[in-house]
Length: 106
Image 1 (tube, one colour):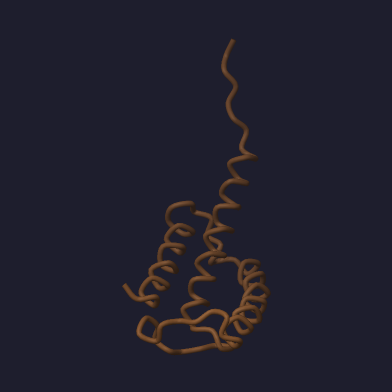
Image 2 (cartoon, rainbow, N blue to C red):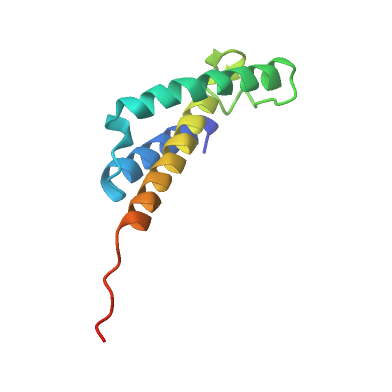
């Protein structure tokens, strides 16, 4: 499977986790998109350095070839999936931790 197909699959699974499994619905929140804009800026900076200096290289047969700041667009997709999954789980676990558990009767 190509890097591109895996990146798209990662985004789809992360969105499914957010919207249908955990019901955190971060994709519908302005706060998520604001935070993601900050994160993607630094992701582009780091990816640009790593790929621009050829510290990290990609097989041209495995990517579609579109690049942003030297990095393949697939890196942005994987980064998005990683951030969305991490934040979705964070919110979900936070909600569970704040929900009181019923006490056993004595």
